[in-house]
Length: 53
Image (tube, rainbow, N blue to C red; front, side, top):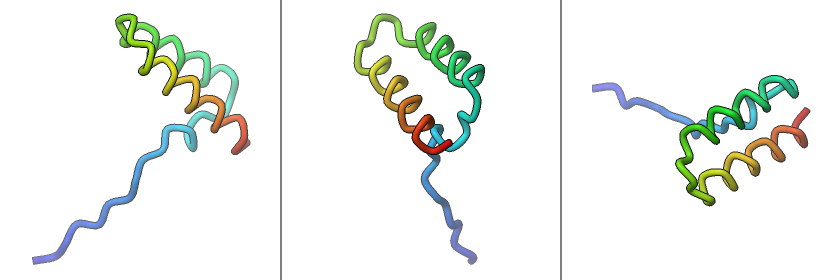
């Protein structure tokens, strides 16, 4: 049987434009339900995306 090979998914690699970052943050704010850690993670993702591009 062949083993499945996976790699980590990093959303920051897929947020390339300010519009994509804003849409991502909007979606995270809707899903967060006042979870500060979730919102902080989304902001971290956006900060890392800005460094990549």
